[in-house]
Length: 465
Image (cartoon, rainbow, N blue to C red; front, side):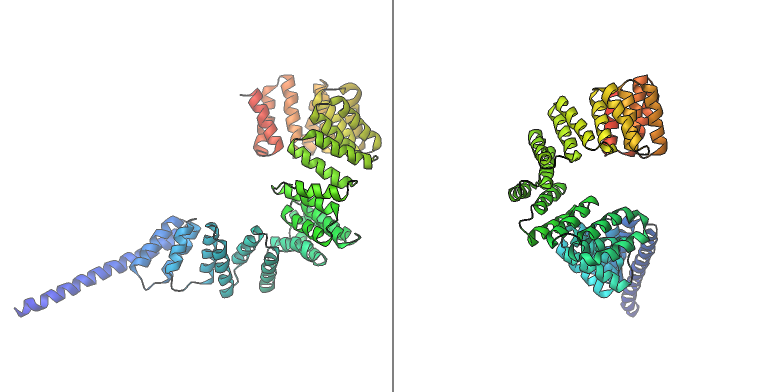
């Protein structure tokens, strides 16, 4: 009787020991498996294994953090947020990944809060970068500037883009301080140099402007040239705030809004109301109507620009373009020829005249081909001029000359894709379909979403269905 009395508790104890041992074994095996999966970047497997281990080993609070990081890296932000909520305390890195997860879910206030807590506990570059990105997307330029400056102040250094981006912001906010960061970015990475040189020239030019409003217009235009149109809007808005009667500032603000997906007509209308004689205003309104497909209005704007600035060949070229889009090739030819008369030593206008003739198959022998030859004479190393010459040879039926010229363009300027398309058209005219197919396939692969790639795709569809 006594023996039976003690056997039952002992059995229970042994059973519990076995169960506990099994739980411990399974839990620690899950940790080992999770660590291995994480090292192999199998974040889906790591997430499940850390989750299992956290449930089996509740005293290991760090496992929920690891599960959260794995889920975040596995691009499963909902799961990551839930795991981090279960962690009693989390580190700077964990707050950063929690911020990333909130960002992925579109919860910007929570993302900002988490990233700020991450930076309070540590100074992770990734937290600075993501926080700066959020402020950039919100167009909160002051906050973005502050976080970038904080990163440089705390770290003592930053990546190249940090310097470049801070220079862009300062160009609008504190122009006199912008060049230091821009030049540093350029010195650290040559790929930033073309943009930096554009901005540098504008910043230097801006100090010569007659007032602060026009200074911002100059800076805004340079930001547009380097495709920073959101910041260009900020510059133009600052220009209009300084001087609400600056017509050019309003016109450029309209242009910048179009470049970022807006309309911009209200700003352009205000600009023309302020200064009806401004050629800049009429030129930008001409661009607006061109994008809208309203070619009579486009033509009217450029005719006005030419009226107020009759010696500028650019307006004649735009008038020619407008006439082409209206289908009036006779008047277009007159305008393009007038542009060359106004600027007989500039290759651009001879090239545009040659391209007009080549595109439309007009006056090739007596106007188009001589214009292309003149363009090359004025600029023998200009790929655009050389390509126009090849195109003129092609359009006039001089296929051997066209092939030789276009092959030479490709050899000298292998990145000039229009020449490949024109060479393909030459091969098609000669009946060499295999060679044409090679050229068109190359362009389509090289520039799938660009104008040259789309044109190559169109030719492929037409000739190689």
